[in-house]
Length: 41
Image (cartoon, rainbow, N blue to C red; front, side):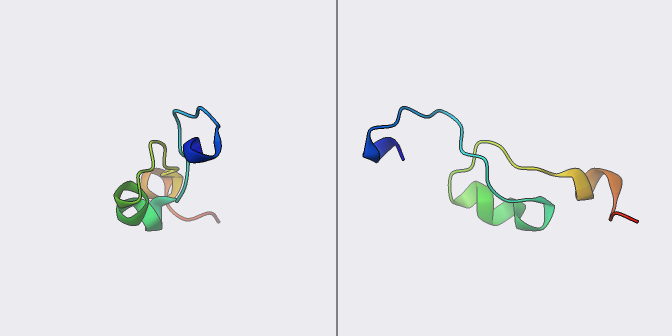
């Protein structure tokens, strides 16, 4: 999006299961709730 003229400093994408892929793609914020708390019941 920065290339489209937006000045963004945070890219939030992915969750616990996608952690490695999200970081590899440049995510600066990843939700890791399942990794910390386990699956929802």
